[in-house]
Amino acid sequence: MAKASQKSVVPGISFVQELDGISEYRLESNGLRILLSPDTSVPVAGCMITYHVGSRNEATGYTGATHLLEHLLFKGSTNFNKENHKTAWELLEAKGAHVNASTWFDRTNYYAVFPSELLPDAVALEADRMRNAFLTEEDRSGEMPIVRNEFERGENLPAEALDKQVWATAFQAHPYHTSTIGWRSDIEQVSIERLQQFYNDFYWPNNATVTIAGNFDVRETLALVKKEFGVHPKSPMPFPAMYTDEPKQEGQRRTTVHRAGVNMIAIAHKTPEGNHEDIPALLMLSLILSEDKTSRLYKALVDNAKATDASIYCWQLHDPALFEAFVTLAPKTTHEQAEKIVLAEYEKIIQKGVKTAELARIKRMVRTYFATRRDGPYAFLSSLNEDLATGDWTRFVTLPEALQKVTSKDIQRVAKKYLVKDQSTIGWFINTAV
Image 1 (cartoon, rainbow, N blue to C red):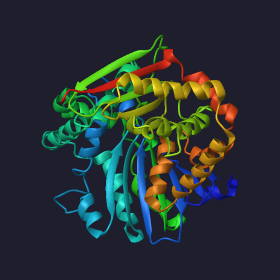
Image 2: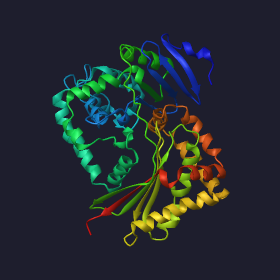
Image 3: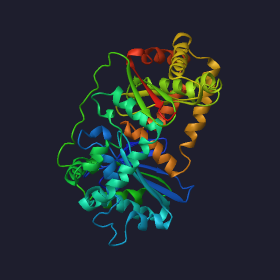
Image 4: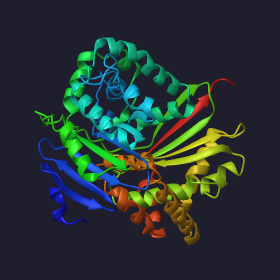
């Protein structure tokens, strides 16, 4: 942890903490959080602003609002728009930058990676659209078909269609019930007034984090952030609270999708929030089961010609989420057979644990993976800000060590605790085009 003497780098900006080369600051006038990670070995920089709002903050009638706003914020703001030829595409992308945005359950990211000299333009653009986005009905009606097309593309992907139904079945009350893109009718019919209200509810400095990585001067960059973002006040009202807890699940749930595609199964179990102490062991369990061709599910399903693919996702979100297995079935494999094989592999770990050699191999793999998270500004920004979305950016630094400390007993313990029938949701995608 860095010394408190670093906190007066720029007047009006407070130093908060430093961990492994990442420094956190706070803009005193409005509460904006700033994360800086300088690296003079590269000729580029990246800027990402994370708004701490996602589909978990939506409700019936405006599901998909965060994602639709993501599109609309590229339509222009007071100082950066088509009329003055200062859109993100003209100002940044035309000069060699990579510009985009993404929406997820707990956050929305807007980012650009660029030659370092473009940093002032990138920061100024993000600051302006934080509070000065146009958000017109003309832009909403023009962008809606594009967003609806994204929805339809997802519906045509068996894995995505099945995943959507599994989450909707596993979560009955919590907003994780609804996928980030939202329901079709909400995408089509949400009013521009409702989107403007959502924007005014959440898009404020004290609900955002600006992260900058790459080649830049720390003092100059802090002064730049203060200049551009300091014009905005903090939110005049408290942010709408998301206070819905998912009720206890009291039995296994099932869902089926009948549609043209490929036969698949999904098996999901409830897991705790991303910052829970059991997450490292659950992550290692997921890797032992499905990370590569030496994993347990690969050997049991793919090597035995029962499936063409088997994957597990241990979701790490702000709130309790899912440990989710997906299996794409081989032509002669039934859904029942694949389901039994997956659950049998779970039971083996519950009863006998994992081998020391298995765990050691995964730990070596994990070290390699985490090293790549600092391969350039974008890899760094996207990884750091996913941890930020869980509520604690420092897990970007602390999680690799926590994973290395996981023992075989830890893995067996969490398997027993979480891979239980009453906390499971099973989905089948049944191909009707046969």
